Image (cartoon, rainbow, N blue to C red; front, side):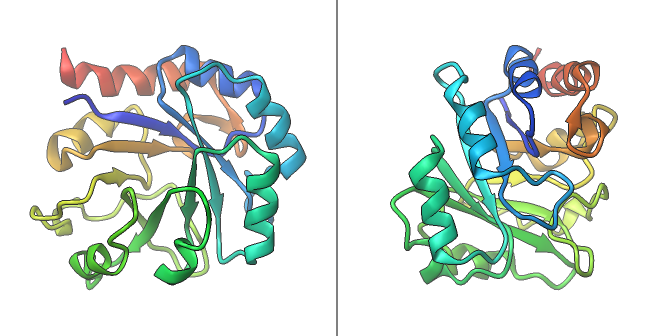
Length: 207
């Protein structure tokens, strides 16, 4: 089974189209004002209107108000929600769209318990833990601590780039990989050459 690819932190239509043309499956839009990759609802709406079919648009939120999530859903053509903070399960399942739960992994994180608690999540996204930072750390975590008996699809994030994505896929065999900073020229601006290199790193595992 090939590994899917989500490119997160899209802020411009040219970056979205570059990612799609390189073969990525999903685009992430960060609705979190403290992030350098933050995009307004209006801007995300404009970008999503111009996307071709068969591309999944993901709205990323960090401990949001319910009204803010509903505002995004009501204006942007989103397919999936990504909760990247400390949102409890009952909050995540409040909305009309499916969701995945991001987990900032530490050495003592009980991922099997997360799988139970968020039983209706479409996937678990595993990211690196950094104090006070919700994603976009640019660092990897110890992939060996991921239990082999997790049944829910795993999306691997945290410090991935064209240099290490092949190794990550071989070791973890995730359903998908998620990249942001690893394909950027500067925060929030994607680099087409880095996107192409990342996609080659993914696809080379399945030749």
